[in-house]
Image (cartoon, rainbow, N blue to C red):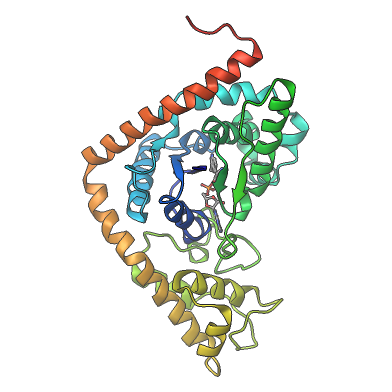
Length: 329
Ligand code: TYM
């Protein structure tokens, strides 16, 4: 069976973009593959966090992913900081990653511009930690949204380089990027991706947003002046809404165009909002139960960390031995 690995940062709100671009695939891949999932909380401290809020966000993200359908019986689901092999392999891989490669990462450039007062070394070496996450589990496939493509490409290069210097050590992973939903755009500025760090909360929909807020955000979504529901170049706002609608309903673009023939954007935006609300409703209900059950959450992430440590230690030991470290007696 192929191995699937992916992770998400517990940095506050989990958006509809995270869900449609990545999480939905995490769930659907679970039956067919050996999946391992994580909350990438080590990555989260590349931006300063308030400790109590950070703890809360991490627990919330854990409960929410269970509510989305991550099944810890099938797929070990752990918190990255609780599995020490990640930071260890990341250090080793840092020494096989070039400064120039990291400098070319567009996400680094964006984040460095945005957090100019805290361009720390962790922000810079973030992709080699991400490579460690993936390579530790010998992952074949990594379900992510389109914005992680460049990081994934770097992980592949690091793996190939290490394998080339020594001998085959790491599986070279492929991305698993959905055809639809890989890049959900902001509802307020469809030229930018939907992001939880958007200053304008109307730009993103959080998976845990109240139904009335979701409906309102879709009602206010930016479209264009043509007033015709069709998928076409230059209609970024409408294309984005069609993408979201198609992904949550399973309808094709042609069906959607037919259903809304002669209707205005008002009707369409209301329909998209309602479809999203209905899609998220059962997730929100399950979340409300999970978040109350702290003992169950603790049991799940503790077991997840134990399983993850067992698997990842094998890879770490193998890699360290190849480099020439003296194995622990
Ligand atoms: P993160 O936490 O920013 O996002 C989690 C997942 O959501 C996807 N995503 C989107 N997809 C579609 N449209 C959007 N607007 C959108 N915004 C986010 C992301 O592509 C991602 O799949 N570095 C990673 C976390 C990570 C990781 C890993 C991922 C750490 N280690 C190892 C894979 C494998 C990140 O910050 O994702």
